[in-house]
Length: 406
Image 1 (cartoon, rainbow, N blue to C red):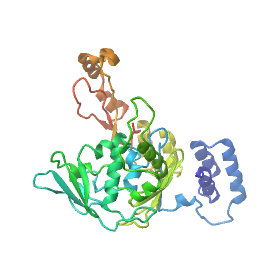
Image 2 (cartoon, helix red, strand yellow):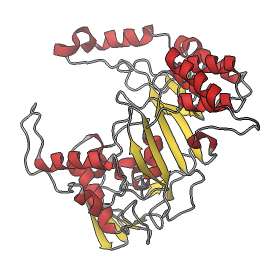
Image 3 (tube, rainbow, N blue to C red):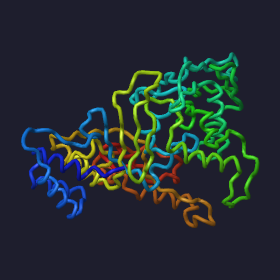
Image 4 (cartoon, rainbow, N blue to C red):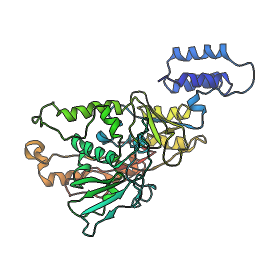
C-alpha cells in the first residue's frame, strides 16, 4: 500500500491550505525524512496550481465515505482474520463488521440485551431445557462467492472451530454436545445441561458463520483430527495443518456475511475493508475503513493532528489535555476489555515463595492500586473485583480512547 503521508501534505501545500513552515513542521511530526520533506517542497513548487482553492487530498482521505484509523496492528495485536483461529481483542473491531453471529449486542451500553442477527428469532427451548432450536435468516449471501447461507454452513463453522483445537475451540465444544440441521434454515442444539445463556455464547466471533464451500476450496475442513501429535511436538494433525493453510487464504479473502468484506490484510501496513454490495441488511454508512499500522501512541496522535488519520486508538495520559484543548480534535473514552494484572505461579517447583499464600497476599496488599489509577492513569481506570485473595494482582482496567491498550 502506498505511503500517503507525503502526498497528502504536498497536496495541502500546493492548494495553499498549508504554508511552507506548516508543511515542514507537520512532515517532521510524522517522522518523514529530510529528503522526503525536500522532495515534497520541490514537487509543490513545480506543481502549484495557478489559482483556486482546490483541496488535493489523496482520494481515501478527501472522500467522506472513507474512515482511516491509526492503530497498532503488528507485533501480535492482530493475528488473523479467520474466525476459527480468532482469539484477540484489538482486531475485534474489524471482525465484528466482516463476520456475523446468530445473536449480537446492538447497544454496548446495555450488555444484557441480546438480539437476533443471523438468527431469525430468539432461541426456542424444549420443555426440559435439553435442546434449543434456532431459526436462521434466509437469502443471506457470502462475500465474493454469492453462495447462500444455510444451516450446513453453521454446522461446518462450529465443527471447524472445535476441531482446530486452538484457543477459541472451547466455545464450540463445551456448551453443547451436538448441533444438527432440522432443515436448511433451522439449527437444533443438544445441551449437556439447560443453559439460558446460550444466546450470549452465540455472540462470540469464533462462532460466526463462514462460507463452507469456499473454506473447503481453500483446503480447510471441519473434520476431527485423525492423529494426536506427541506432547511437546511441533507436528500437527493433517486436518489442523489444512485449516492453518486455509487461514492464510481467509486472511486475504473474507468468507463471511457482514456489512463489510475484507480487501487487504497486511498488519505491517494496512488492513482494509469495503462495503459489501450484497449485504442482507441496511447498507453501511461508510464505503471503506482503513486500519493503518502506527505502533507508537505519540505517532498515532500526530497522524490525527496532521490529517493522516481520522481516529487513533492509543493515547498517553499526558496527552489527554492536549487533545481536550485542541478545537479540531475530540476525545472519546469508554470501557475496554484491557486489564493490567500480575500473574503468579503457585506451584512450589516453579513459583518458589509464591506458592505461599501469605506471600501472595502480602504482595497484593503492597500494591498501591489507587495510586496507579489516580496518578499514573489520571483516573481513567477502575479496579475490578478481585478473584481469590492472594491470587489477585494489579487489575487496573484501562479506559479505551484515553489510554494505550494493554
